[in-house]
Structure formats: structure tokens, C-alpha cells
Length: 42
Image (cartoon, rainbow, N blue to C red; front, top):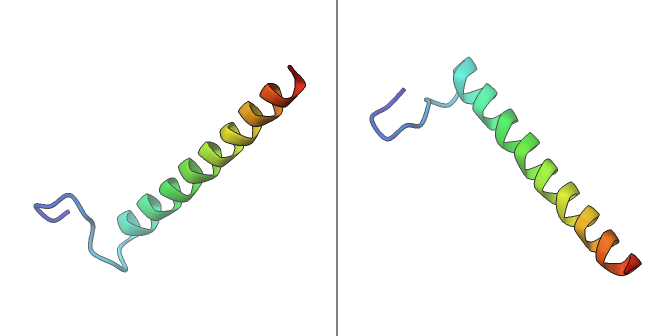
């Protein structure tokens, strides 16, 4: 890991971090859509 907290591109750590960020973004989108659905039902 570099001093700025970013793993060098091409390393397994970089790939894992990238995938985890993708999962987190997907969960946030899913959570938003659930909240919108609940507010429409009210």
C-alpha cells in the first residue's frame, strides 16, 4: 500500500478494493430504491 492508502494497480489488493467499492455502490443504489418504494406506498 502506498502512503496515500491506495494499492498499486494490478495487485490483488487493488482488485479486491475495487470490487468491494462496486458492491458498496450497488448496495447504496438498492437501498435508495427501497426507500423510494416505501415512500410511494404511503
